[in-house]
Image (tube, rainbow, N blue to C red):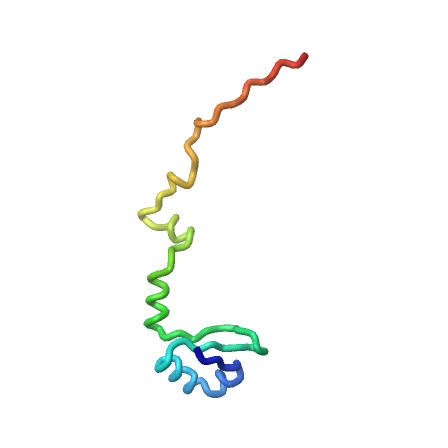
Length: 85
């Protein structure tokens, strides 16, 4: 993966985008540290489809299984209080 300083990515965006489409993901650095990655749209969609759903997405879905997230009520037993001497 080729690395682009943010100034070069901004100044030569067309070339940056062409490199992404031809060669794959391109890394953008800011002050020498990794900052972002430009990824072709098709690869992004593939990654999104392969990613696990978030907890919010699971709970909001029609097939949410919330019954397994909450323990059943009434299953716990209380201890009897010991008499004080």
